[in-house]
Every structure is written in structure tokens, then in C-alpha cells.
Image (tube, rainbow, N blue to C red; front, side):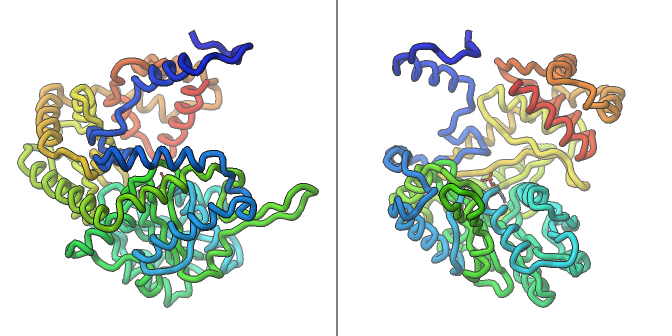
Length: 474
Ligand SMILES: *Cc1c(COP(=O)(O)O)cnc(C)c1O
């Protein structure tokens, strides 16, 4: 049994590593392509091994002080330079991930052109929650705008949402949920005319779209070469296939980049000057990202992008042949969202059936009229034949099982629940009553949980999920 006390005497390495390996047995596999979200596998063992070695080489170097560790300046200049070279130029910052890149872009926009009153950021429905997080952390207001029938940002709606307090409009290349491309030139141009900055969220697309275009595919303009685009985020820990902790945010001009920085000399210790949110941080992710980029090379990325996109196209074609399922929108990158047209075929039940067959398909809840669906991020190793077979089989089983039984009085009770009156243990008890065991183990039956969340408004979903996380770690 795990104990709450640190061992008095240090334990030998072998036993600890065995314990880590045992804990990992409950995790989803990070290689092999059966998990269609979260993880990115090239299928090239040597690349991932090299990344791990490079990570270790840089592990204990502290990015806090680039004058003490000039290796990080040399590596970051190269990595950011490679990204700028493929994404329309600019100067940038290497960050820990999409969220940090977005936080920096939003901070830069807020500070570059101060407005009277609370600054606003205009977000299409499909923009990533990292922008909501940035607005929340940075004291800004989100102005929501709807997307069109094809899940694309609507330039007219964005234009109508601009006010004297708008500091940033956001478009995605592509959006994560459906893989569709926003009309970036139109939005960037209207933002420019209004004197407002425009961020392109290419977190997921930034390191796959350029290669698809170089392969001769038709990729609409999206990067910093588009007039009016002032910043862009691109995650290397997605289609760059680097280990987690690797993203780049690019700014069209260097003075905007400097507004992302932070300095403080207001204490008697060392002077703090940071390009990113973190101060002390390992150079491991930077070393690993650099090594991964160099080892794969441009031709390697073109090949990986092509494999992933072909997989996405085969998935789309295959889904058309599975009764009751359809693809949402017109994805330009290897991201596919699959919804159900058949009330008897519930996508959340389908996801549980797939999980029981060794596959993880990521559930996406309904939002603003967009139906619940399953998200697939295809990568260099996706075996679409096997994926489609699992999808068809799970769909058949899900239809036979029928939709989950969600008592409407339970949904009402949750919607009206005074969460503040419950502590973590009380909340865990409540979860147990709907069949969710926080102690884990086994295959979780998520369909009921997803169906309940799906029936609740976003604010209630958020409140419940915060309590879930708190109870999970209690
Ligand atoms: C993944 C993603 C993000 C956030 O990235 P993290 O690395 O998870 O912080 C933002 N935008 C889009 C479009 C993404 O796909």
C-alpha cells in the first residue's frame, strides 16, 4: 500500500523503476496509434529514443538564466527560426505548450495597445479553451462569436463584435474539434482595418499544414505571411512529434514579442527576466524538440504529414460507409470529428465499446448546437484499416446497447446542486452513486458521465469537473 510518508531511508533504484512501470500499466499506450488524441507517434523508434537521450542531456540545465547556460539560446534560436522559416517569418519564443504560447500572445496583445476599460478578446465558438484561460488569468473579457454551418469562424460576426476595447481577434488553423480552417485572410484583414491584432492558433496545424502544402496539397493561406496576422502559435509536441513541453509562439514584429516578456527588479534577490510564464524550467523539452526536428528533417515531416492526411481521408471515406455515422465539416488537417445521425447510436457508448476493444476515441460534448461527437487525431502511424474495423464494430455494439440511461431528475439535481456544501469526500460519494469509482481500476464506463455532462450547461459542466479533479487528487 502506498503510504503518506516519505520513506525514512532512500529506496533502491530497481524497485522504484519497477513501481513506475507497474503504475504505467493502467495508462493508455503512448505509441501505436490506438489512442487517437493526446499522443503523437512517428512510428520511428529511433527518433523517439534520440529525443529521450537529448532530453536527458539537457535535463538539468535551467532556462532561468540564458547567460549562465548559453546552449539554450543557441537551441531556441534554431528551433524558433525553423518555425518562422516555414510559417511566414516573425520572431518568437519557445514555450512549454500551446497554452503557454497562447497566454504569451494574449498578454502581448493586452500590453501592446492598452485600451480604456477591461480589454476584450474576440473568440469564435471553436477557439481553444486556452484563450478563455488566458483571458481569465489576464483579467480580460471574452466576446463570443458563433461559427457558420461548416464550423468556420464568421468574419461578419467577428467584425460586428469589435469594440473600442477589443485588443485581439483569434482564428484557428485549423480548429482542434473539427480540423476545419477559419477564413484567416478575411478576418486578419478586417482586424487590420480596425487597428486590432490578430492571432492565428496553429497549435495543432502549424507543423503539419506547411508540409501538406509542400506536398502539393491545397492549403489556404494561414500564417504570418497573411497581411494582418500579428502572432501565431505552433505546438512542436503535436505534429512536430517532440516530447511534451514544446511549442513556439511567433510575433510579426519584435516589439510585440517584447510585450510577451516580463521583468521584475522589485526584490533584493536576482533580477527576474522571463520570456515565458515559467521561471526555472528544465531545458529538456527544448533539447528534445531540437533533436527531433533535426532528426526528422523537412522530408521526414512531409512524409509523416502525408501519411497522417491520407489516414484522415481514408477515415472520412470509411465513416461514410458506416450506417449512422458522419464526419462534421471539411477538415484540412488530419483531425476528424465523427457524429451520429441515429438516436439509437450514441457516440459516448461507442467510445466505451471502442475502449473495451483497445482503442481510445476522444469524446467531444455538444456545444452551441454542434452535436456530441468523437475526435480523431491521425498521425504518422495510424492504421486506418484497423481503426475503421474497430469503429464499425463498436458502432454496431453501441447501437445494440442503445443510448445510456440518464435519469432526468439526476440531471436536474446536479444542475441545482449546491456544490459548496459538499467536500471532496461528499462529492466522491455522489459520483459513486452514479457508478464512477475514483479509486480507478478497470475500464471506466464513461458513457453515463458524458451523457450527464452533455445534458448540462457549460458553466455547470465546468463546476462539476473542477470538483471531479479536486476529488480525484484528494
Ligand atoms: C492543443 C491545442 C492547444 C493547447 O495546447 P496545449 O499544448 O495542450 O497547451 C491550443 N489550440 C489548439 C488548436 C490545440 O490543438
